[in-house]
Image (cartoon, rainbow, N blue to C red; front, side):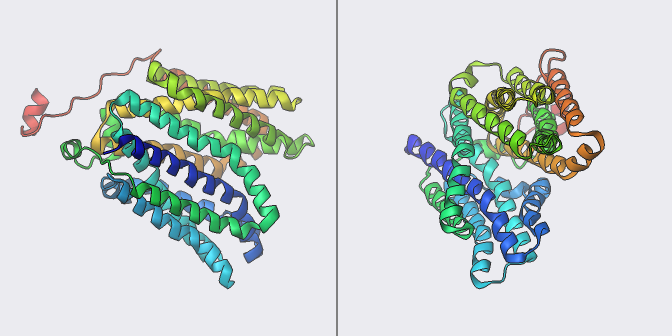
Length: 408
């Protein structure tokens, strides 16, 4: 088995598939608006994508434990390709409507809920030890974040040259290429570890691993208040007569900072204390949120402050991955990656859903300050400084009655 080849195939799959998804983020709303003539339908795909993720704790529990090979994960990407083809095929025959957009979102959302955590878990399983796994997961995060910089200008150029519909076909082709790359992955998860842990519920994994639980809690709060940054800066720019400028400066600075952080994360993450690094990452990002309203007069300052938050986040995310790879294995590892994605991505969806109402009531500036303060507070409380986490619960040895395990 060629482990390096398998790892290279998985990292390339991440880059190719995310490059396609981020370019489509520009094209899909344009196609939906052109085909349906209704602005509200442009959000249908995004809204439908979140539903499978939010409910994945119930429907995906058994499925995720079968994703132990590259072939199985390639099958998930193949299903995602089918979902991606719903809109361009419908547009080609002139029948795109709300049902097509919702179906595309549900199918791709289900595939993403399974495929993302599954790919991270298998990548960690392919590595020789936890430190190597942490570095490879950090490289995967770099491949993901690099598409934040590359995809928007590429998508803008492609739309200007050939229109948005071609981008949808290109994304499906890119994800199909990722599926083909995963077919070449020959390594698998360790059967012994999988058999020893069975099919754990997500809540049981969090209960057994207090450090992972704290890291997931911080990710959930960070995802919930993320709307304060994106919606808050956009609304604040409109209120101050600079529509689009503040959010552009903030997102540019955050993207550049996160790419810089992702470049150093593979070297730094294995050397840093994981829980403290997670807490520091979210605390720094929260501090930047709270500071942004004070620097809105200067676009360069907005970019610099947002860049500081972006710089810290890849280190924090890499530390979460290291916590999971060092504390869990087999089926527990797949469940831990799944619950981290569920809590963070689900919280982002919930925050964006209600964020506009919060900002309309409290104002964009105060919302940024309160959101940042909440994130800082959670980072301080959940980190290892004020309340050291308890040791993880021991795994009961097989073959003994439950009452004997408890007594032991």
